Image 1 (cartoon, rainbow, N blue to C red):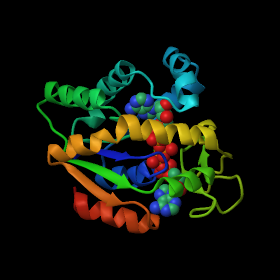
Image 2 (spheres, protein in one colour):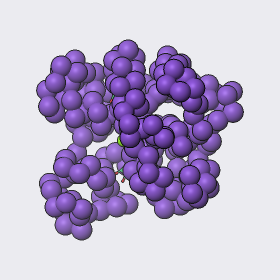
Image 3 (cartoon, protein in one colour):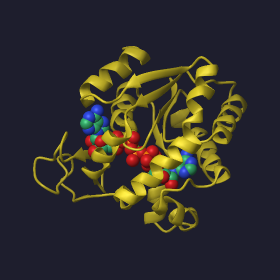
Image 4 (cartoon, helix red, strand yellow):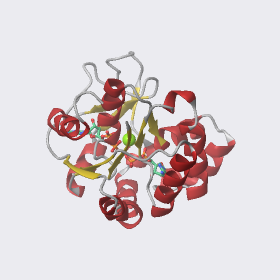
Length: 217
Ligand code: AP5
Ligand code: MG
């Protein structure tokens, strides 16, 4: 399976992507996670991307396309991958198609568009906490950790993302509408867009994703 998770900030790309990638045994490739790790490690990429990520702006297309070309060329992605948060612009979508064509004549099977209203995602992001160690995603309303501030999976400390501060969330939503929402019609035109209602409880949303992807892919 070669698929994209498309959707606004807080729509559930990371939450459902983790589960789907484990069940389908393909790597989950999140450009947001790659950039945040680079920022934490203060690599050259991280230093260059830091200001944009923290302000909720998009990192330059060439930078992100370079990351993706390297990552999907690794052996674990030879049989498929699930992209989270990429592509985010028409230029990135065109670049991805070119990378996949050059890398074996592959095409995307599905673009799963997680559809949810802005007021819901603002509340979700306000309540999101993440494990800095294993990446597990929590939510104080819908998926609280068993012990406050501690990861159920690995026992590490939970933290909030710097870009989940409300003003930055608003900036991210504006960027999404302006730069990324055009990909809905881009992929609809190509016949691979699958809209998923992502407003309900997480298990219900995931079941809808599985209906699109199929039980065994
Ligand atoms: P990125 O990390 O991709 O962030 P995002 O798109 O803003 O999405 P989020 O990670 O905030 O949300 P999500 O959809 O993963 O939701 P989650 O599952 O966590 O990008 C960050 C930044 O990096 C960008 O702003 C940009 O600067 C840069 N960047 C990244 N990719 C780039 C690219 N391609 N080009 C240029 N720049 C790029 O869920 C959210 C919360 O809701 C959680 O608490 C979860 O538990 C809860 N939740 C999820 N689903 C449900 C549900 N159904 N019901 C109740 N609660 C739910
Ligand atoms: Mg995410």
